[in-house]
Each structure stands twice: as C-alpha cells, then as structure tokens.
Length: 86
Image (cartoon, rainbow, N blue to C red):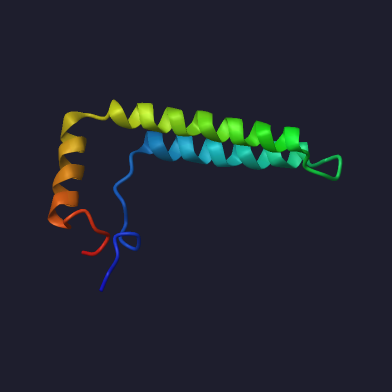
C-alpha cells in the first residue's frame, strides 16, 4: 500500500518561493521574539496571527489557479475516491 504523501507532488515555482519565504520569515520571527529568553502570550498571538494570514493567502491563491490545474487535481482525487491510497 502506497500513500500519496510519499509520492512527489506537482509544485509550481511560485508556491515553492512563497513557502520557503514563509518558513524563513517564521524562523527569524521566532528567533527575534525569543531573544529575551521567553516567548510570551503576546509573542504567541503574533505568531498565530501571521499563521492565519498565511492560510488566508494560500486559500485565495489556490482559488485563482488555472482551470486546468483545478481539473487535474479533481480528476486525481476522483481516481483515488478522495483517499490517500493509490
């Protein structure tokens, strides 16, 4: 049994750039917020806020994908009956 999480996913360069930027930004922000030796509630709230903003951006960008990409995704999901098994 092979899972889809193990197979390579088709990615576009824009999504890779966006995700790498986000990961680097989150790491630098966490480092900067913890320079005083602790991560306060305010620091955690700020990190969660940036996480929510990132999710909103990802959802909005995915809705603007070309129709052919959306169709390819729906065909692959239909072939697997919506499951992760291949």
